[in-house]
Length: 439
Image (cartoon, rainbow, N blue to C red; front, top):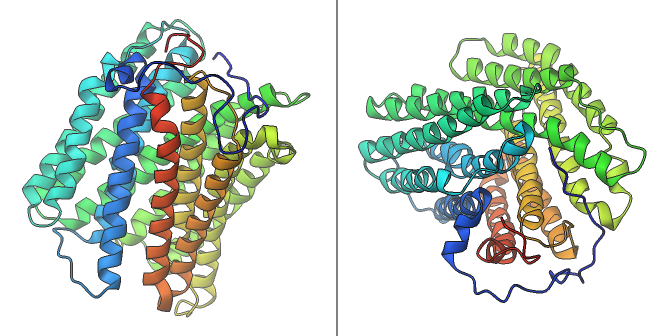
């Protein structure tokens, strides 16, 4: 894969002044200049739509209003987080980095035009139907499955046309992407027959069998590579067994969580299995983060963008550590007043998935926008406010008496971060590259 070096900051704090502003006016037609432009732009809009809808629901509940939905609100939240916007960012990355991984000609944005449109229509129908109509929401999920199938067919074609020997990461992405298509179909079927247990299983599988494994696969590929490009004397280290460890840890955690919620395991059985498998995995992932250069990435302002990637990855180890700690509490006292609830889940989704998304979306947007690939004070501050949002949501899980206001605060903080991120980066996607290069 070709490298995009992480450069020291040349812009003043809060400004993108590394290169002159493109004289061309911002226009939607420029979204078709490269696959990531269209996918990231739509993904950001869907992210904001999902986040604002969830924040509004939490605020309404906090105010005492009753909001009726055709499914438990937590399941609606889960499908919108895992399937509402993450796949668009992943598709944009797949069609941008994928050709480089596979050493084939660059993809065009036209390949994603219809899938992106179907995806956005599906998200809109899921939200619109959630208030009163199972059928509308189910049809929205089917549109997601159709959109993801189109993306998968295109990416599979890239893999087949490549003659490189190392296709491991691309093939892993393809496998988990196929699982995602299955999850969307299962979600639609569960709603159609009004079986919420099927819907819940689809949402959990979407997180642990689709989105999280793809993020882990990408992290294994790019973190050592980016670190070695940015820091002297750091040799890229990404043995295949490390990828196996990452995927096994996330899949095992997800399987245990799903089995417990479907009553396939007794609480103490699930706790023992979690402690014996997820606990050691958490320690191994923490060691992997250090081995990949976490500490070196924290040594200066010029490395902030790299540090954001590393810190996002650290949340995966924290999530598994919290899961192991919660299992230990169950074994010590099954009726303990102190439990971690959904804290491990949100450490994984908001911390790991959200943190990596923030860092990678920033990096790709800047690198392919012809502007310095660096995190200035504005972006660096937003990243740390994102960490505040994660901590607020974890606090809501471990402090039930104040869960409602803390959850609402976390949602509003999350919304604020992404609104401010969008105000900076969406205009970049709507203009040609500032350096005059194609893409």
